[in-house]
Image (tube, rainbow, N blue to C red; front, side, top):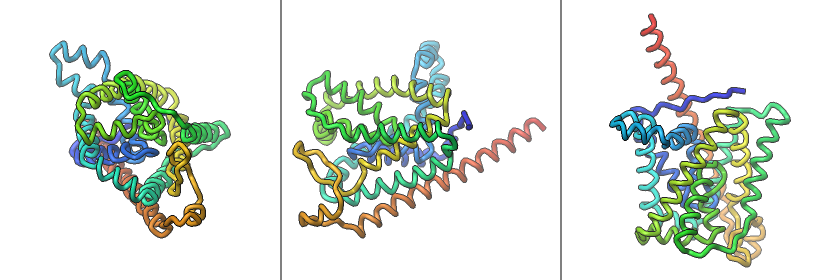
Length: 321
């Protein structure tokens, strides 16, 4: 197994990073879908984790020494800034639209994300194939964990400052894991609707408290993931792929509400027997669109990375020559 991975160099293609950020922001608004999933399938996951984890004492020391440029490079500042702007742009611009689509076209939304995830699973298994019992076990454990999280039904937390901070910490930590939805966990904690309302109503106190918790979760959890990627890269990738597989339970398009008002999976025949529209043709089309979109992103991303690596090798050969 390969235990190293170099991130794609996005220099000169910052619009592509911005678009990935908007996709991550849109995904994070949907309970059941993770922005980490989008980062994972679009080829920026490991670079994102590395950059966040570098928000450390070393960066602060560089700033105090007057080496702001060095600190900026240390944290991959341009990458994080462009990605962050994309995420925030999407959240503030699309909050109403995503809320509307989830409420009025849930089958099409879930089908689209299922297509994204299915294609991503195939891509990741082609990248790191589980060729032993232990490797398969990592995938199975990840799938079981994502499935188990989807079964959680919470009573909800009081919407007060300490729990808003805690919600931000937990949600953002989950968002860093492909297949684990921070929005879904907020739903379980009873903080999803208050958080969405705070964004649409520009409740700055709520947003600041939630953001502080999220920043803390980012810094702590990113270090854990980075350590795992550095020490056991392929095993971590297999585990994350398992999370994606398990998340297909959450993104199953046909759902009914349980007694607590939370979505639970149902068969299309159950929906039809209750007089509901199963939108089978639309669901298949949405799934295919999501599938093809991931294929296009990964296909062209791999080609761009290969060309960049070839160019770098040529430049290095010229220098050494």
